[in-house]
Image 1: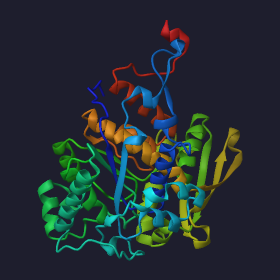
Image 2 (image 1 turned 180 degrees about the horizontal axis):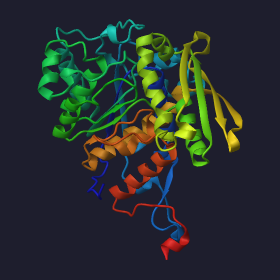
Image 3 (image 1 turned 90 degrees about the vertical axis):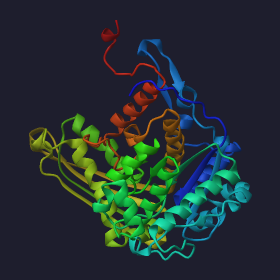
Image 4 (image 1 turned 180 degrees about the vertical axis):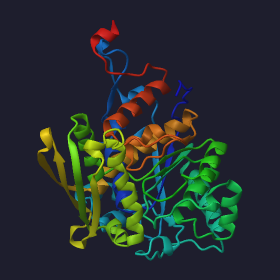
Length: 436
């Protein structure tokens, strides 16, 4: 990446969210509270993070939000789609993530955010029955309706730029099919209602056609196939995804690099979760769970690189389970049992019990991605934004390159991308003798 002429973040930035559920409403509510000075946006790199500029000996530290021209919190305007008609206040109360003390001060703003009808075919999310959905003879009709929605939102909100972050439900696992290979083939598939084209792809295609940056927070197939990437290049649109890195996978991308760095061997890693929100209900369907499982299982192999050290990592038993347990709501609990070995092969164990709320962990990621994907477009960066891998379980990569899952490598790559974007030297960490 080389220095880009990054235009200023002038005017309002529209944020459209397919899926105004637990994650979407938690994100919006947090931004509204932060705008009023009523809450701290904990977990947001763009709000609280810093990076070093120049040599370590110079001690120049800058806030990320001061170093790159990001959209202000005050300039964000919110909207979205959902398959249920509840406004953002009703949806937030139903999700049960935030307490009433956080919803009451911003109740009127949340009540005013009424979702547009969602593009939805139930065969891709079998555990949900949408009541607030679009009608169309073909999937091409639905794409055009979504494009009209984007244009209407822009006009009514008076925004100068728009981004979309997909926060909908996990769909049935799909792999790219024949219709995904070319733009002509995909458009034909829309007209013919090709079953390989899911709900998420309709949103992604509509955004690409409208020149709107698209972020996929789920493991769903969205635009990560040849036709989608070709359209993104043609329309100069940046893409990022997929599957927000929260909870258990966050723990893995922190712990596994440490085990590898210390050359400790690994026999097995068993992970299980219980959660009772809408996401848990959807994942109770084996076809939807398969999409999440694929997203989660690739993390360890990529970090540990068993081919480079088969003695330590060549025979790992890695299992992931998710159980739908309604009493838990959005307060997920994840258990990890890690069987490792050290000097002379002696066995050891690590046990992790992480009680968390996925939506609380995901909300600051949405804020950062909204700002960074908008920054990417103003920097004229199109297609896959690999430098945003830090935020995803299964990050998109450029053709021919492999995924990097080590959280610390991802963090360094993200900050170096920001430095390069602004024409500052990238940072490595040798000793002081290398600076002389």
